[in-house]
Image (tube, rainbow, N blue to C red; front, side, top):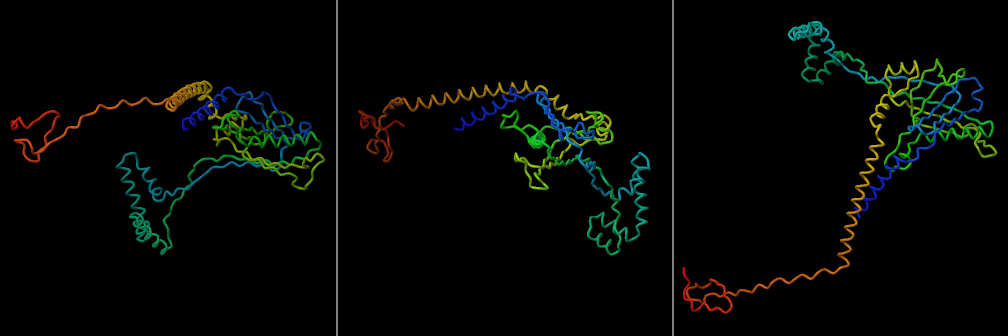
Length: 382
């Protein structure tokens, strides 16, 4: 039974891999959704959400919406603290002493002596207690004298943070066409939050959700980003929140909601460096070197996948042959009677006699062969 389970698993893996290599990746083209329908005629800035698939032959989805109020940008860095303590006090004297180790050691000693003189008796006691590990004693002395060792705390940079964005829209359709567009827009955003099976068939692997390009478009030059708005790097749509009829429980005659509020939360695909921020703001460069390197590294993935499928086919064929042989042997054992086992040759029993033969001590056994009489042979030769 375990062998058949292994075979089923191999089949599933093989079929999934084959589906990835030879599946239907969708149709080409661009799907444009725009609300309101006369957005292009309003001559006002708008946001373009462009969803790009990883496969070049899949359709591109573009959603245009008016710029909402209260767009916020947050750029940040992460910092920790480090206490440099006595080292920071003595280090300047050591660094100015010269490159030789002897000169640095002498400078360190002089600096330590100068600091000790300035501490006074109480300060020297506290410092000595810290040096020998008697922290509780040092703390007690510090508390009694209302003095504390200067920790010389400094900020230490540990990295920048991922930037996140939130956009809120209230969508109220003026006619049936706009109601349909609103429904398509919210469904598109919802779908793109989720990962999908690899090529729609793999049970083992999930494909990343598609990335988005968010742009603030200048109405006077369609397709051109606004000069005075910060630019956003490629993003993942992390959260979609939808509220139906937030102000009144009103539905239209076709049962569609009167108003739909959507809140979109995006997160950039990587932490940017200063160089990347400058390129982004200067010319809208959203090139992700990591993605490009991965694409180049695995550029021959189709050929690798075909070889893997071929190997799986050979493994499946071998496993099926082994299973077939095993079934045939089992059937043969069940259907055909076993050959009779030939009898083993009979070994004659050798009787023994004790104490009745001349020259043989009492209690010593000797073989007694058939048709032989040992009584007339006399005593044994020793």
